[in-house]
Image (cartoon, rainbow, N blue to C red; front, top):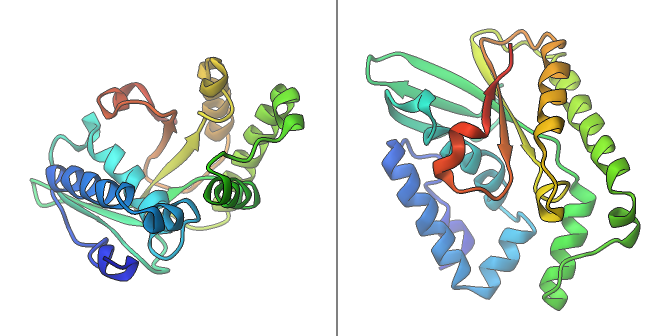
Length: 216
């Protein structure tokens, strides 16, 4: 199966259960193919939207905030939002899904992994872990402040942070980082309905409510 055929219905409306089934189907097909695995690591084609938009929405669909959700989908394009959720009472909510992406590091890591089977390891990165954690915090906030320049009236914003490669992989707790980030985001006017902070740390989806925060 080629990439275009595999993800042709990525933006189809799905129930939360169908979101789960689709995610695991794509994950299984990808894992069985060396070629597709390499494309996924590089975020080629719609794998970019699958990883950066569909997966966070899938995570969100497993949370307490989607108990009454009927159907949802990501929106591919430049509409000013990335997802729509329709609830059982007929109401509809729009969501912007955003997060800082270190494109250069992600590309080098994926390229190295594809070529050698071992991820890109930067000794300086490991040795200056505390500094890198702080830089990540600042980069996340830089992205948030850029979003504040836009108008998200009637739109909810989901800010995604992946703390795994900065904390959990080194057996460090990211809770203090999250607390500081919530305080900093709370001081930025995103002009949106609600602001959620979604922490990804390689956790089980059953733990999603412990990793999803409302920013007041």
